[in-house]
Image 1 (cartoon, one colour):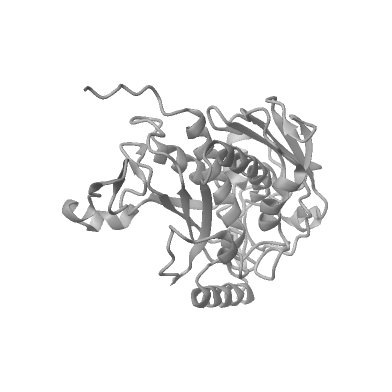
Image 2 (tube, rainbow, N blue to C red):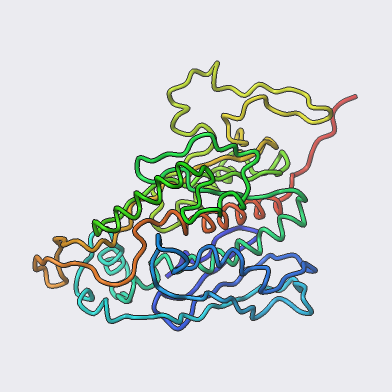
Length: 366
């Protein structure tokens, strides 16, 4: 199985299965001399972990990170940084009845079609539990980003659950503290309350629901990315669409921009002292695949969780039609725990682009 590594200069490889002994990752490209400890990674991991509220799966995993390599005397050595997490609260018994079934909208059938053999315990490698390693890598990336681009930051939040959409959230000023003031991770209180009630209602109905995570990368310089295949927004889209349950991505005005005229959508330039800026930001901080220096704004759409506790029709490996109802511990909505995962992927893309440098600039003619 290939495809377990993400990035070019800042490369992350993850390993492990949902119900295996452990999960982990290796990050190659971390600059030497960076202050780094397990305590630096744990806050983001705590935001992702299961069992943190009544809106998410009750599975209890501490997700305590253990650094294995690449750090000495509290600083990175320039060697690959490796880390692991032990799986603690594993209960594969709920999957015994499902080992011969192809669950609707899961990876059971496609994984077996691709590899001929699959780990049926909790989804194995295709489980969203894999993202714990991404969040650890993203936390490292954020520390690298802060050292290379002081003042740069990544903030994401839940902007929609089902048909409940939050409005009036300013991407220029929204902070993680505001995002974390409620369990659903929406910084607009009234919308957050409605979102939480919707998720609780869906759970009572033994169903699931999807929504949107919005994000912003602030403080990046102009000139990151490239104009063809390695466009900044293309790398960002690749990272986001690699996430479990992600079904859509947009940057800047996104799909709403298709309903605008060019005269309204274009971002006029102006001089802010010695810096060129845009008066609007419909481009989402990226033009021609290269950052403008304005905040990079984006949204990721997540589908409803595939595991529901209602009776469903499917087939088994013998080709027989069967009816089943899922058991186990699952999120009714991925959005609250998806926020730090989306932040991790954004940080990984940003650091990769920064390490790529700004290229060679031709001096202006006198």
